[in-house]
Amino acid sequence: MSKIFVTRSSMPEKEEYFKEIEELWDTHFLTNMGVKHQQLERELKEYLRVPDIELFSNGHMALELAIQACGLTGEVITTPFTFVSTTHAIVRNGLTPVFCDINPVDYTIDVNQIESLITDRTSAIIPVHVYGHVCDVEKIEEIAEKYHLKVIYDAAHAFGVSYKGVGIGNYGDASMFSFHATKVYNTIEGGAVCLHDEELKKKLYNLKNFGIQSEEVIEAVGANAKMNEFQAAMGICNLRHVAMEIEKRKKVTERYRDNLRDAEGIVLPPIQENVIRNYAYFPILVKEELYGKTRDDIYDELKENDIYARKYFYPLTNKLQCYDTNWNMGYTPNAQYISDRVLTLPLYADMPLDIVDKICNLILRTRSR
Ligand code: T4K
Image (tube, rainbow, N blue to C red; front, side, top):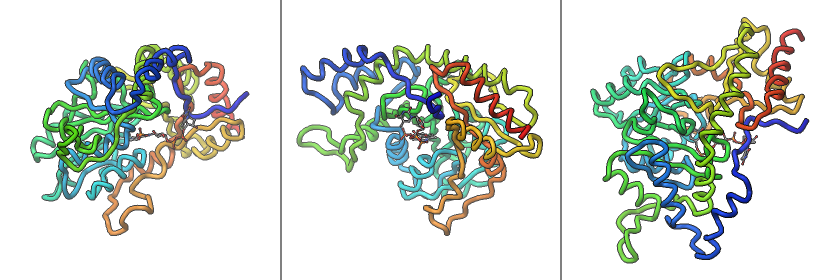
């Protein structure tokens, strides 16, 4: 058996992509918001059912520039149970992250703890729809309104997710999606910010394209974070198939659930009410106190068999040495408990079900060792 990684990029047939990029050879227009970029923007707006969208070279730059465009200052409340990008984007904007714990059910921000962290320096909340699990968007909105805070969602994992029939990109002032190769939907690398405010859109556009309005008018001190035409072409192709890819992921997920449901001490990911899911990840929690083996025992056993599960998200970002040691890194015991026990199992659309069975058998076997 060849190596099995935590995921494998979804790709269209070669011919489909080649056909999509053919005209780029005719026009020699490879980037700078060309026809593919414009087409993808239109199509994604419709697919995600959002009022507006701005495309980016990657998810991280989309988030970093969304934070900048929102003009945040001082402190930002966020969670440490995430990919480093979320915290880096805050810190790289010169802001102080204030770490809120997560709830132990779906691992998103614990909305009951947010208010106690608000100070007169707080300007925003940056929650994460981690694994595509939907944050308590209603409570977050209520708190944000009460304290006049901005809300920017890290929706990197939440492509295609909806809550109560509403596309998840409609919540908050802005939501960032990642279209990285490892995501449910990819443009090779890429990302987007969904938003509903024209002024914010203009700022974002300026930030991703040097502030250029016309040849002689440079309106803002922008960076360069544009999605190019080859990325957009991949996105156009992948968008044609993403609904089917999500269906296939659902089948893989269900097989994992069937196989692992009775394993005491292994906690399966939650199924949230009123949520249309995208089956982005399959994180299990290994409670060694009940299971008798640790997360790392399982990780090692799988690795020995050429199966590369990942400890998404360990370590917590409030444990990273690269940040200012003078900050208060917060007390986040739920996040710590989960981060120490979580293991994200391999999951991609074309994953054969017999591989899922094999992975589950290896996991269950660790117990008798
Ligand atoms: N916010 C959150 C919450 C995020 O999770 C992320 C990204 C971001 C923000 C930032 O978005 P981007 O700027 O990335 O658009 C991966 C991804 O690189 C990263 O996008 C993702 N989160 C994170 C959770 O996972 P690594 O360092 O674990 O990736 P890597 O290279 O080890 O790849 C994992 C597996 O995926 C490989 O073992 C094989 C497979 N793979 C990988 C690549 C690169 C493919 O099948 N094709 C590929 O091209 O970070």
